[in-house]
Length: 118
Image (cartoon, rainbow, N blue to C red; front, side):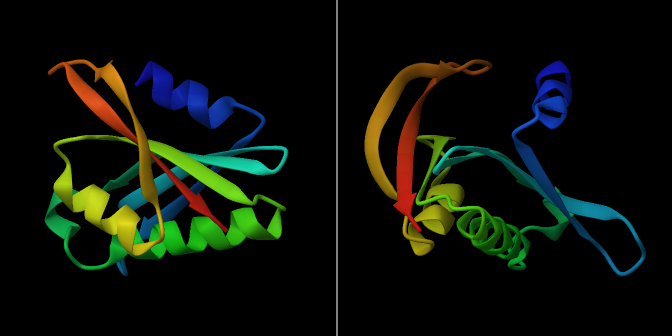
């Protein structure tokens, strides 16, 4: 929770939320822009709402907004075992360029580093 709050309070953070018809937050994305680069920091969809295109809509919106702000390249890290997320990112033009060894904790796992040009 602490890292989530610090990401939201950063001057360069760009958060967006997806809200259901009854007003519940069902997903969110937090990005950051630094000069002409962007980074997806967090993307999450409520477990009961997954596989409905919400993550894709959030990502599409964020990438469009980043492009309007002059971002030309977006990066992110994702657990190597998260095939669903990797598939989503690949559909949006992200390519794996590197790995970060033991990047994640609980459980320890490598991160795939991905980039997309806007």
